Length: 96
Image (tube, rainbow, N blue to C red):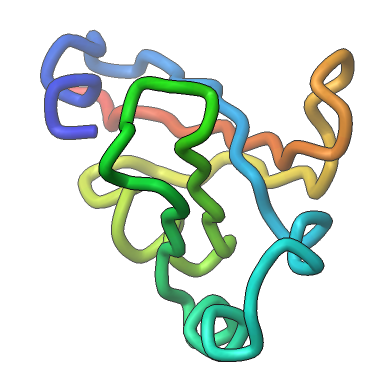
């Protein structure tokens, strides 16, 4: 996120999708508790870059951790049309 923020022009927008609440059934009870506290959950981190690796982002994690230095413009649960059930986030880099 630091690199995306760095290369984003002032006033520019960043749009991305994440696995959110719709995927809670994939989490263990302990993972669900951590997720509900706003923590990122990662499955199969040791194979990052493959389709086995999955990350589950609570809205609070995106807002409080990933969006540092950016303005949260919009959050649409399951709003990523064509990418079923992924949450959609729109952030903006402040104008200089």
